[in-house]
Length: 365
Image (cartoon, rainbow, N blue to C red; front, top):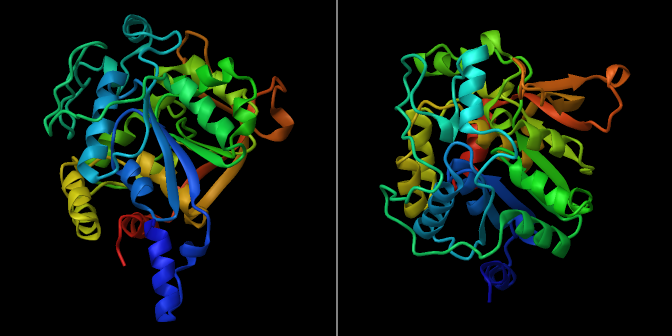
């Protein structure tokens, strides 16, 4: 008997009111991302959510490292039953060599993910480790015994969505390579998804928080307000995804993230809210980063967190020039009419309420 059945049986025996979520079907989601972080824990731990699988992709780290991180994270937090499928190792066209050539022509990028060797200038965050795409993985918190599926992420996405037509949300918080490949393999794929939530793109972010760490992340947008890493890592995949026929798209660009931060006090709050193995994972997280992915998960869990949004037509620049990877947007009267996508762009969120929602997803009463 599952935990929900046991709960409902106790409710009937004791004659007490059931929690609201007990009578509701779980919301089904696939997480597509390049690692294992707080966003994953929010969705895995929320009793109203069923995570059908996690697909990995190269972005902040190479896909093999992202897969190992997910598998180990699932082991440590007791979610070994969640399927994991490794996705694309390389972007569709972009590469480390092309990125270095682009920088020589148009200037340095703030963050390059798996291509990153050093920061362009001193920053409050730790220096990244540089690995090759096929280097062996040795995680500091132990290597996983759990194995990924013997199936590429794109095929897993297609198979799972077809098994649950019009019921699955995909929360994509990394480069969109897997989604582009899935759509090319199966032209009906996007139309069978219930909703796509993208953490990616940028409109015009402004620095909100005044501390050093926040300033480091906001500085990129002063001169390049339309550039964001997830899209810039694989612009061609992002554009292909924008042209797919998703029934509903929610875009979380970089804009609302500048008002957020995984501060030490918030980490302590979440540690107290979570189960011990989950709390131990949260305590390992480096503070000071904006909460990009967590916003995406939070607004899907609770759309009422959004304080300002705008419906826009959108695409991404795939010309290998100074705007390569930039987000392109239009209002209705100005769109080019070339099958570009339409989505609701989240521009700001209620940050205190969002932090409470994250804590509640992890178990805070």
